[in-house]
Amino acid sequence: MFRILESKFITSAVKSDQYPASAFQDFAFVGKSNVGKSSMINTVLNRKAIAKVSGKPGKTRLVNFFEIRFKTLENEDIGFVNFVDLPGYGFAKVSKGDRAAWKKMIMTYFEERVHLGGVFVLVDIRHKADPKDILMIEMMKESKIPFAVIATKSDKIVQSKIQLTCQKLKVGLGLTDQEIIPFSSLKKKGIDKVINWIGSKTI
Ligand code: GTP
Ligand code: MG
Image 1 (cartoon, rainbow, N blue to C red):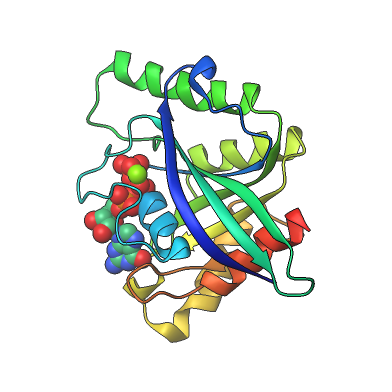
Image 2: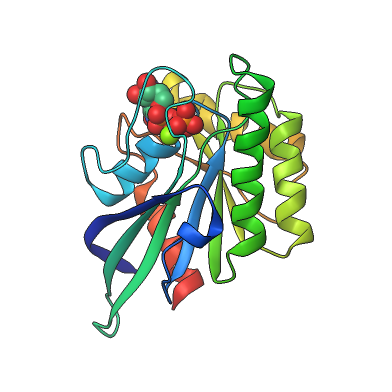
């Protein structure tokens, strides 16, 4: 539906007054620490390291904004959206104070950001539905924020089990009217579905 032309890092923020004054819609990436949010941003944007990735949980500690320039395939229009890389939740090895600060950063983002085009909620394909993710999904539903659930690291399970695993996760997460999108940054799988989803919310 559309093709990404360019992407650039805009800014990192903690407080809402540090958010960029952009008129474009945001697409935010949320999920537990280490689930693969920053990797997914790099993969979708076809960039090596525009978002910082780490093997250790807790890499992304700020709200990071990226500006994406894209072209629609139908009418050749040029458009813009923002990608927002959020700090992960559920990382055990941080102090109470840090955890509270991260929670505030994430919640502030959802409270303050008005032009939200959609949210990607990332869950690890190998894990059972987590109460923290269920809570996040509940929040999206309540706030009527369009969201898509992504099962990351699909390369970690055998291909033939991906569909059934996503189906089980769907039930576990309490989803009724939407399918989970399997995704692998390692194998570059799921990119088209993600880009089409963004396209369906912007055009
Ligand atoms: P925080 O910033 O801590 O919240 O983590 P994050 O969700 O941004 O995760 P990140 O993208 O930094 O990736 C965490 C680890 O998972 C890194 O070691 C990545 O290389 C690895 N990883 C991410 N995506 C994939 C994937 O699709 N497949 C595999 N096998 N590993 C992945
Ligand atoms: Mg990250």
